[in-house]
Amino acid sequence: MGEVPAIEAVELSKTYRGGVRALVDLSLRVERGEVFGYLGPNGAGKTTTIRLLLDLVHPTAGHVRIFGLHSRADGVEARRRIGYLPGDLRLPDRPTAAEYLASLSRLRGTVDVTRRDELCERLGVVLDRPLRQLSKGNRQKVGLVQAFMHRPDLVVLDEPTAGLDPLLQAEVRAVMRETAAEGGTVFLSSHSLDEVQHTADRVGVIRSGRLVDVDTVEGLRTRSLRHVRVTFGDSVDVDALGRLDGVRVVAREGATVRLNAPETAMDALVKELARHTVVDLVSEPADLEEIFLELYREADGAD
Image (cartoon, rainbow, N blue to C red; front, top):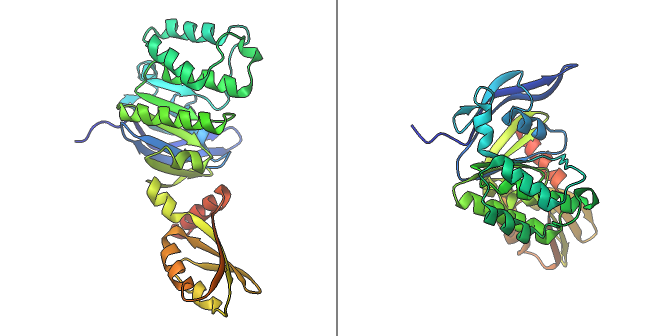
């Protein structure tokens, strides 16, 4: 029998008052030592999943185990092994960041102070001002430090880079990867494909409370559509382009043709285009919403 996973959710469901089904029959396994991206638009059920994992709300059906520990019956022991950054981070007003982090360190009793101070320096935490005076981004840095500073076995992050500039986002990604390299596990909930694909090993995609797919990041990338705009210097059979596997002709405006193509079709498309005189060629990734729609369309087709 293999190693006990960091997270194992079995047929997990949550229905709120009024019959609102926030999560439906979710079965999910997150292995130790991986960064698992949990991807979906706002309202898909990501935060409900996290609250169930942490036993902050109770499931309507199903159960969760954290390192083999039942999230409810063994909740206290399980949470000792977790670091958590909520999406709706709330911090006290009066203490400074230094006072707040020191207080949490005393409460936990297992914090490596050197690690805490290193994280503060890397993220540029403003330590000497009351938390109420800090911007959203600076408060987010404090939240990130408290999630990682005790070297938890599992770090659960809900939209961790919200409000951070690109350089700090890259630093947070580096901390996540380092955590996994040291044997820790990161559960990264996000609506940002860019964040997930630069950090995660595997990705789960959720829609309307249902897990529609779990794949490696590379597998997800191969499904990502690209928008291609080609301007030709000679006549071209547009129908021939549309017959390529996965390629769809969106519009033709004079000598310019606009196409949608998955990354897996790009090699065949470029070879077909090379048979003609190409004056201009632009290829751009589809935006997040379009990629979600494509993944959801595949799920509907499978159903």
